[in-house]
Image (cartoon, rainbow, N blue to C red; front, side, top):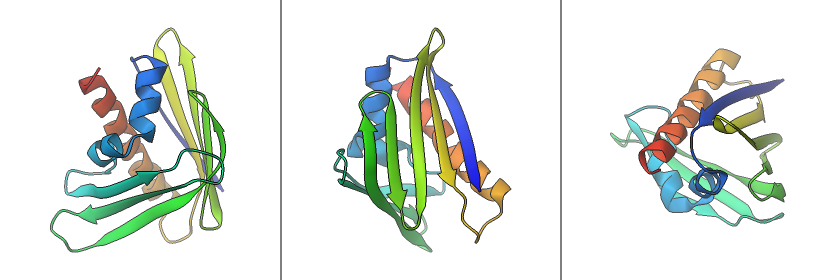
Amino acid sequence: MKITIATTINAPIATVWSAYTTPEDIKQWNAASDDWHTTKATVDLRVGGTFSSRMEAKDGSFGFNFAGTYTKIVPNKLIEYAFGDRAGVVEFLTDTAGVSVRVTFDAETEHSVEQQRQGWQAILNNFAKHVQAHE
């Protein structure tokens, strides 16, 4: 099953793309709630290149790595990637309102679809706030 989330950001596509693909930016926005943070991020933005983000609870009680391999890159338009046996697609669609960022990913079985949708949407909302704050 695939899950899709989206947000629209009133900023130039170059700004949105850069914030989504730059490790220092990723560390600032990649968390679903205020009690989590990303302590490390790497990006090798090319087909066959890898990415990794270390997400941890701020109290140190839990953490995990989110990592994968890029399978398709169209600058300022599309990022496709594989993570484990799952896949994700990030689309960057420009229109008069700014840039719509749409993320579609394969659901996993450990958490409910609604939990996954809420968590990923919270991260995308943080991304939008980050870009707007630095625009």
